[in-house]
Amino acid sequence: MAFSGGVDSVVLLHLLHQFAPRFSWQLSALHVHHGISPHADEWAAFCEQRCADYNLSFHLERVDIAPLRERGIEAAARQLRYAAYARHACDFLALAHHADDQAETVLLQLLRGSGVRGASAMPTLAHREMQWVRPLLACTRAEIVAYAGAHHLRWIEDESNADDSYPRNFLRHQVLPVLEQRFPAYRRTLARSAQHFAEASELLDELAQHDATSAIHHDTLSVATLKDMSAARAKNLLRYFLQSRGASMPQTVQLGDMLQQLCAARGDAAVCVEFGGWQVRRYQGRAYVLRALPDFDASARLSWDSQSQLYWAALGVQLDFTRKQGAGISLAKLQSSPVTLRLRHGGEAMRPHEHATTRTLKNLMQEYKVPPWLRDRLPLLYCGDELVCVPGVAIAAKFQADKGEAGVHMSLIERSV
Image (cartoon, rainbow, N blue to C red):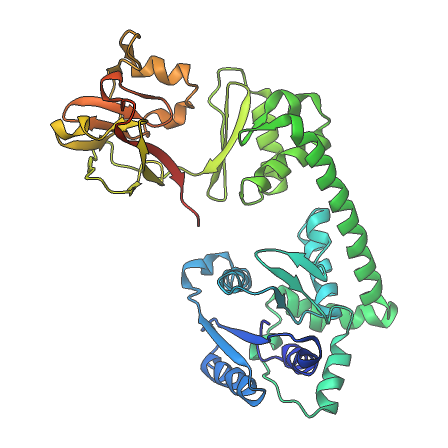
C-alpha cells in the first residue's frame, strides 16, 4: 500500500494488517520521500518504524521534484508518486483516499473546467500498471480520525495541509465547512455525481472504440471520418486517438484548434499542432500523433560495428539490429568497407531489388509513404560511400542477403518513457 504516514494511511495500514492473515495477503508499504518538507526524513523514519511494529516489509522511494516544479508542487509530487508506484510490482496498490478527498477532487475538477472523465474523480478500483484500490473512499475524514483515536494510533501532521494557498486546502478549510452548513450531505451527493460522470465517460469511451474500428489504422486516424462526424463526436474520437497513443491530453481550446486544422486546412498544407511535448500532424488524409521531434545534428555520423542497438538522436529512437538467416542485409557484404549511419542530404539513390532500375531516395520515400517530417531524420546505412539500407523503405539489391546467408534486419524501436 501507499503509506504517507498521515492519519488516513495509518488507519488503512492498521486495517489491512488486521485483515491480511485472514485473506492470506502479502502486505507491504511504500513511502515516497518528496523532500519538500524539512521534516521529510522524520516522516520516512516514522513510516519505517510503523512497518517494523507490524513486521511488514517497508520500501522507501526518494524522488526529486525540482525538474517538474514548474508544473506546480502538487502536480509534480503526484506525477512522481505515480511513477514510484509503477516501479513496484504488486497485484493491488491500496490508497487511503476517503470521501472528503473525493468531494474535493470533484469540485477542483469542475472548477478547472474538466470534462466528464476528470469530473468522475477517483474510482474505488482502477486499472493501471496494477490494480489500484481505495477501500476508504466511502468513509469521511471525521470517521477515520475517530477510528485512529479509538485505537490509539499515531500519525504525521503535514504542515502544508494548513496552507490555504494550495487550491485543495482552500476548499477544505474555507469553502467546504460553509457548504456543509447548507448541504450537510454534500459528500454523498458529490460522490453520486462523480459516479454519473464516470458512467457517462464509459459510454463515451465505448462510442469512441466503436468509431475507432474503422477510423484508426496502423496508429493513424482518418481525417475524412472526423469530417463526417458532429463536432462533439469528432472531439471524442480525437481524444481517444491521443489517449491510445499515450499522448497527454490537450486543453479544450487546443483540442478544438487541432480538429479545425486537421479538417479544414487545404489538402497539401503541412499541419502540425504542438501540445505538451507532443505533435499532431496530417499526411495523405490521416492524422499522426508523435512526441515532439528532438533537435539533431544534420552532419552527425554513427559507426556500426555489429551492435544490437544504437540510439538515433534525430528521431529520439533506438535502432534495432536483429540477426536473420537468408534475409535482411548481408553481413558478409558489409565487410568490404566501414559501416556508418548518416542522414539524408539530397541526391541519394539506390536499386531496391535485382530487376529494378536505380531510383532516387526521394522517389522511394514518396512511394513508401514516408511522412515528410521523417524523411530528413531517417537513418541511412552506408557501407563506405554506398547506400545500403533505409529502414522501412528498402535494402539496396547489391547488399541483400542470399538464401542461407547470415543477415541483419535494421528497424526503429520507439523508446519508452
